[in-house]
Length: 322
Picture (cartoon, rainbow, N blue to C red):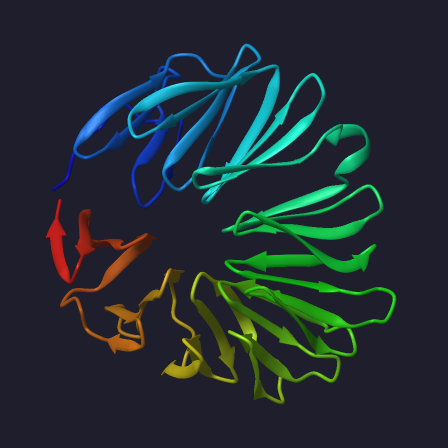
């Protein structure tokens, strides 16, 4: 069903799998889920959205909104969120707490002055460098030491973290509780997604590490490389390809005019401007009889426009017209 949450233009909004969080025209923070609109708060200084929660601050107090209920986390503190991760720095004392789903772990004290140098929040892990520039991460509610200090660029996705070792020039990876030596020389670039790292090695070979194994995809550099969630898409010459679940699939012999990826789904506008979807290893073409435009992807809902201004929503294989 199509629901009207507001009749005036909103100032900001964020879409998750569970709800839509937005700032209304009168600057109130609201959520829409389950067919109902919920006022979260009339006053806030900032807000961040996780996969099923909202954290916001007002007058030095930080609050958590989850399952329709608002609770105060702390006062004189700072917080941010991403995916399933909630990060809170409590003051005074600067205690850093990380909550992964429903479990909270205290990382350290005196965070802002001595302990945390830099940090990243990636899907289901929190990584950081400590006072000695040692790279560590929190994964499955345990703190893991990567055994490297002063790491080069590091990045991650669900269950995976990759980094360069500036001392021995190795390219390394933490995956599912184990550390792998991927390359003895720093690659030219790398991109991570869930359980996956796609990279161009020192010699120009395109490789993908997936669930503990490295595959050489090509001796040539791809273009238009995007790694997100469970997918890696790229152009190899004039071929538009996607890597999914350890396999490479060729979709088209051109770069689509518009496309988007989320979870295990890639949606695109084909050569004839019709809708096509690659989902969990299967490609379906000609899903629309009319030409489409304004293609957008919000989790498992595809929005597109046909005709002059007809909005369509494709959900679970069925199209709905607004």
